[in-house]
Length: 383
Image (cartoon, rainbow, N blue to C red; front, side, top):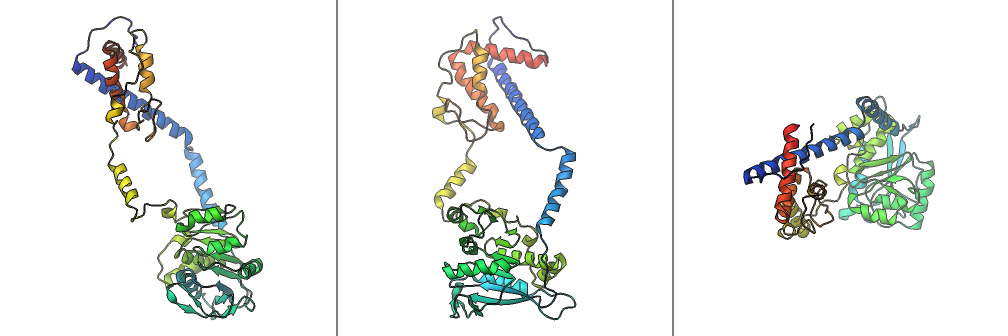
């Protein structure tokens, strides 16, 4: 590119020529900024060889995370469902259905032996008013290999102590929904990854800051401890436990028997829809704000347009340096403001902001602006 710097006075530009110059300058700024962004993205992204080698590594890591569990050579795997007042039905009924539907070729007995455990033998009232008589109490419950903790009322010290002791010999202690609060109160999740019902993310993070909360996880498997998201997530975690014991084929057959078409049990990070809080339908103020943001045009307010961008008129000695310093400001990310209070716009609106600044500066010193425009035209013509 050949650059010519004009040092002599120039003839006045017509309005039409000035408009053409503005359009060309907008294209220059837009193209230059786009090129810089593309260079930055190419520099940050891995090369083809690196990307090809990284993808299989992730798949291998996911396979490693599914640590196989050794089923007993004889008999069924005992599964204890710890329940109390207010237990959420789907949290324990979903996994219960999964474990009861496991059918293994050539085996007559059930793969899992299921029973409920509560602090006492008194009937408990689950969600929706369902009455359940527990099979066992904390004192006489058989030693479980799998413990399921659904959402329920606040646990007593005796319940927390039973979970701690029973988990030592269990293969998996799993919580469903806000049952993660019960499991976290035992201290077993301290320093580990966990998830819970999406509506309880904030409260969980405040109450258990030592637990690494994973938003957007369908379930989190940390070896002998596992936590599922809300409600139906427990079905996927239960299928995942079946896979750890008896393999992928057994889990797929169980899902087929249940006519369950969810795929979350094969992808623990499939709850990304719940990773961020959404606008509540009843929150009219948030809805109005979201609608306003979606229809807002990228333009300057009347008060901002009237604000001068320079403190003194431009001189013929240094028009380009001071003008270009002001023109750099609009090419930035959306939502930010420059030092003079003018909103900075994204690339698509950069040219428009540049010309708004031209119009404001033009009033201060029309001759200096014409000199800069003509210099840029010469650069364009000789490139």
